Length: 124
Image (cartoon, rainbow, N blue to C red; front, side, top):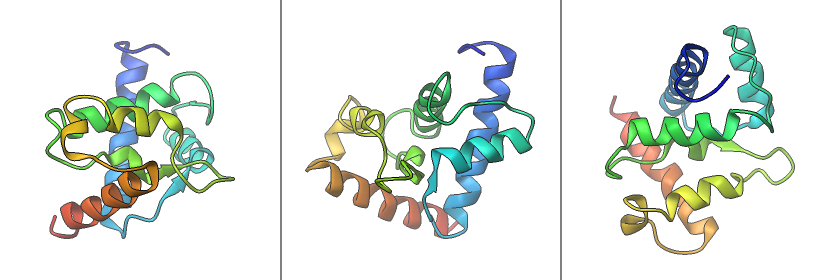
């Protein structure tokens, strides 16, 4: 599975839908393993910590917020042991166009994204 192929695009849309559903139901984070299992249930074999998973999460956030005005939906996916996003989330948040409105340390950025997701999806 590679960016741009039909399997990847189908898995990307599944990731977006899973994360939107999660955001609409209270923004409780889920682990990479949980997301991988949900994807598998939707016929997308995506390992939790290798292969396309980091690209799918980045692309899901970019798709939902191409110009940085909406929260990064990938904030909902966390490492099981740390219960925090991986470094890829923070790298994305500090990259243009997202960096302009995302300031502070990792914890601040993540908490602010979760709060923004709650606001964004509580009205939808």
